[in-house]
Length: 559
Image 1 (tube, rainbow, N blue to C red):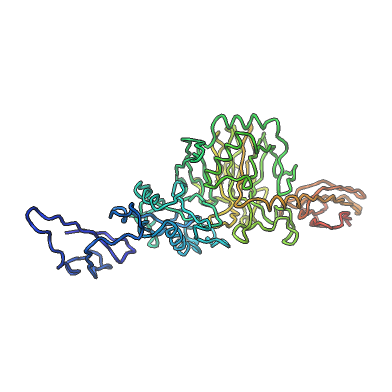
Image 2: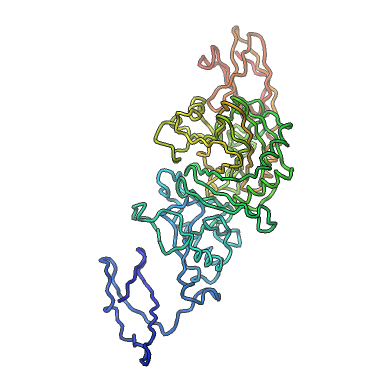
């Protein structure tokens, strides 16, 4: 008797039966075997046909590695970049069934797209909007489609896939019996996961589930830099996609970055135009783009992201210092119409900021580095995360906050940094880093990546960050040059009583100062900024509002 177990989604089972002949006897004649002699224990499946082969069927791949039955039976699970490691998607494939590696990538990527795009249930409530196909993106290896394993290693051949399957790392999603979901495509015969990354987008580490840990090498295979250096990547949140990277920095690097940049720090700036003195960011910083330590760290960050390093894909290393009470109000790192210096589509200084459309350019990921253990405070906070381990359903921000990327009320910003709230707050730990994505696996921008630095309560915090772009940042450089055309505006109070001038930061009013009757205030500002004038404070009566534009009359009379 022979016992077979079929995949739940299979309607054909093939088996090679080896029947050695006893001494002195002829090999048994299997010619009389019929389907009726095989029974199925499943009420759903029945044996309907029995085919006999006089010889082994030839594999599609013309490789010596595919000459054995063992190799032909090996399976990997083909998945789409950005699927979060969901158990509900993924297609088992046999590498030896394909004539070439490029054929496997193209066909499996197309199949994974058909199975995954448009689904909003990949990770339940943590999924966010369904993935879509980025404009101009396809599955052709000639255009840049490629494959990565669960540890982020690039796979480039059928032999590599067979080696991966033999290594038996296993698939990373939940088995069907664990998720108790009939839609799950889990297959215990698939030995390893492979993520197919279409052209025009970048590999995104799969979150899988909160607490999931992956070990990845940070070594440069060509130069041997960081030989033996590996880090553990731990999922802190499913949405936004946040990971802690352990032991990313070496001790001499943390000390060296502080020592080099301590004498060079100055007040931090915000926005495309580099506006200093903003109350939403009170830290100091310095830029380190060329020192040997900075270049080593930047190269390692690119290897963590599995992107080929290129100067035009980075902003340089920004070294940050926070003293007591200094903070950075939660914000998004990518540029939008609101934070790029433009008031609307026509005069936006950086309108090509949508990566999934028209080959747009924007920040893709942030690698945030901790250079010391902050004594108290200084956590990196993610106000919109509800998928981290410590969240129990408590209120974090006002409803609707996520509808305006980068916006959060001052009261909510203070609350999520309060130790009584359930917000995701990552405590600084020397040498560790936090990785989070501004873009999802399809190139769409993720407003849930809202993050900030909580105020320092005691001691100081040294940190650094690297922003990596999805495409060369030539467009942003040109946009910065255009956006830096400052406007010198004079607000003249022609009323009989004093008024208060506020900068409207997306609903939050920042007092610029009172203007006595008959006097004026000069303001250096930029296109897109909005100012309002009120009497009797921020809750008083509004008497005027102006949005700054190039070519406007800069002599504003308040009546």
